[in-house]
Amino acid sequence: MPRAIKRWTPARFRALLRAQGPTSIRFRRRIAILTGAIAVGIVAVLFAEIADWVGGIFNGYADTWHWLPLLTTPLGFMVLVWLTRRYAPLARGSGIPQVIAARDDPDAATSDLISVKTVTAKSALTLGAIMCGASVGREGPTVQLAASVMGIAHRIMRVPLRSSVVIAGGAAGVAAAFNTPLAGVLFAIEELSAAYEQRVTLLVLSSIVIAGMVAQSLSGDYVYFGAIGAHMPIATALFVVPVAGIAGGAFGGFFSRIVLALASGRHWLTDWSKANAVLFAGICGVVVAALGVASGLTWGTGYGAARAMIIGTDAPLWFGPAKFASTVATAVAGLPGGIFAPSLAVGAGVGNMLHAVFPGEPAGAVVILGMVAYFAGVVRAPLTAVIILSETTASRGLLLPMFATAFIADWASQGVCREKLYHGLSKTFAGVR
Image 1: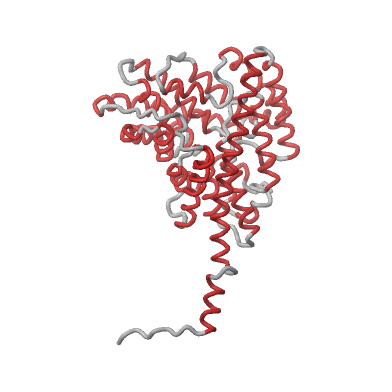
Image 2: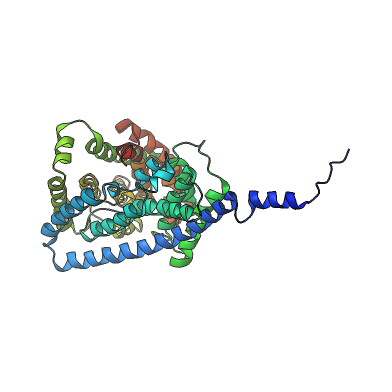
């Protein structure tokens, strides 16, 4: 028998409006996600522009007053850590661990971990860290800022905030910050959700792409490091990939181990650094300032040095270790600020050292493999590492070697530090309300 045709009665129409109309929770949730994604793209671009402007101011200052950062950088570190501990303790560090911790209770997190107060302080203090020459990036803070924007949109529309939306908001921040929508999607699945069974709907994933598209429309269709288009023959990759993967991954794992040890380890140095946080920050500032003044290359994100190495410009072999030390000192000092961009710069330094081992191979390709390896070793998100480097250098011809390098690096990093960096750091925010 044919199916009976449902008659449209006034009662049925009212029921449909209640379920899917403009006043329904489903409709309001969709509006919150879509408007939140647009807002994320706008906020991410504005924050990036301001951060780059502040970084330019510091670079001019460091060039003009070459020795003065030896005084101002340590003092700046001390002031920023005091302000963070006194007024915004949840703003310390990258911002990604806070978003991971916020998944457990998203609605409560809008009052602390991703509250307007916290992210406002985070943004201002991160800009302060950049102004001091700290080895920080803006991507991690953008993730926390983006998750907060999603929370605000849901509060305005009066709908509950889901953990999947917090994840999407954070990943949309990555997409907008690097102009890498695909990397944002993978970051949501691979790092923020921590498991593939996380329920992230098509609408939520679309918000990541929307944020990236909004950012691209505002800042232009650019490639973060420039269209390098690097490639490497498979026969050559068979020799370079294992070395790059093991060296970069182990180096990245070593970074994670140091940071986690000083964040939650049980030894005298951890206890002393927490009991004397401001003084410890000053000591870290001295390390950052000494390296910056001596080299002139380790200040800030390291974007300029990384790009120069990618395009084949000769760089000193000590840049990688020096930038590594500067980034470690900044990360353990307790300042607000991300590690994405500095990690890419350290990875470029690793690739530069690898090119000395393989001098006959294309410099850009070897440097990019070093960046993939080190970044995957730090973040332990190999797919994200590959897609970010692919999208930020337009080197899709290097995809197979990059994938192999990333997976080897992930394995090598586990041998040095079993716990994933961001998830280990997120535990320090558990129960902190």
